Image 1 (cartoon, rainbow, N blue to C red):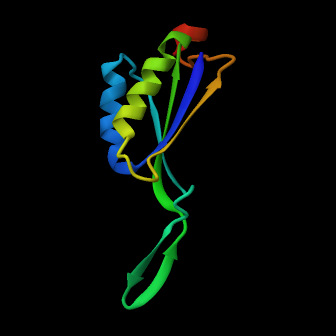
Image 2: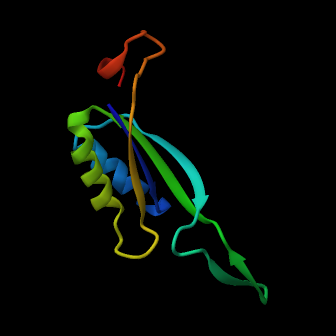
Length: 112
């Protein structure tokens, strides 16, 4: 099993969710996040005063999938989240040693 974490622009969340559902994935976790990469924030004007926004709003999506679903999930996220502009985000994949469904005690792939 693998955990896929994707940091994306907030307005792309619905498109990514729908893309994941189309490839057969149903359980995702979504967290609000702030951060910056190469774009390093930007400057805005508010009531005549200039100020820097260092941390930009992002959304972090987490999904745990079986090994055979990793590539379709990554491709679905990448295509749905892409705008072609800087700050589109990142996708990280890590191994999951064990998963347990609390309600039933199921483990492994059955828990996902």
